[in-house]
Image (tube, rainbow, N blue to C red; front, side):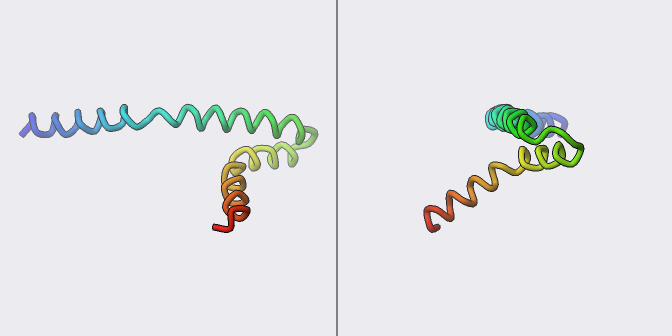
Length: 72
């Protein structure tokens, strides 16, 4: 019984390590967008919050407008 549980745990670990590489790329994209938006929206507390919001959701806007442009 303990060996079966251990093999399931090992297979889950392998699955995570095989498919977990894109998180770092997304994080670098977020940091880059945050730096870009903070450069233009710095000055007050509310503008910094707007910059953080834009850096978080810029990709969703990009995909939305791309799909709208492509008429999908």
